[in-house]
Structures are given as structure tokens and as C-alpha cells.
Image (cartoon, rainbow, N blue to C red; front, side):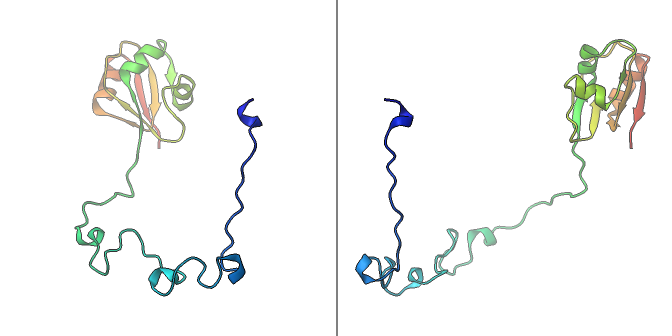
Length: 144
């Protein structure tokens, strides 16, 4: 017998508040009176009986900069491994070689060494990356 051949055991859902004869009439299994017997009576988990909740007693910290730009980073060492001498390395080229994803702007960082002459096109460059690419005889082009 296989798992899919086992008989399906499906329990009927409990229909409460459908008369006294059903056994779940009148109070529908909620007991009598009190906060939890009423509709909308359940309090959230963090409720502390009216005491100021811990979440609101603690101070707020820091802020989130809504203008922050998150870059997809590529190091010059990686460009040296993947690219051929004299290549034009733009966004499509980097996506093709699985160096970057299309969703974020690309920033070239200066980790590693570069010996090939490359024409690199990206949204941003670190100072060291720019120097290394130009020192190897390549060029840098910044996209807007």
C-alpha cells in the first residue's frame, strides 16, 4: 500500500451556535460572560493587563534612511578572472557572466588585482577600483 492509497480521514468542522440540540448552542462553547465570550474580545499577545506594554516602554533607536541606494557589488579581482583583455564590461555583460543581478545598480569595488585592460561601465566605483582599472590601462564609465 502506498501513501496516496491510504483512506482519507476528514473530520467535519464544528458548527457552533446552531441551536441547543447540537450541543454547541447558546454560548457556542465560549462559556458564560467575560471578555473572551464576546466577539472581538481576544486581546493581543503583548497585552499586559493595561500596564504600559514592554514594546512601548523601550526607547526607539536609530532611523532608516529612505534614500539609501543598495548596490550589487563586483570586485576588480573577479573581473580579472572572468573577462578577456580589451572587453567592454557593462551591465549586460556582467549579468551574462553571472557577476551581477539586474534588480540593483552595480558598484565596482577594489578587492583583488587587475592586469587586463578593460572598459568598465557601472553605476558607481570605489576610489581604489577606479585607480586599479586605470592603472591597468583600462577606462571607467559611470552610468546615471
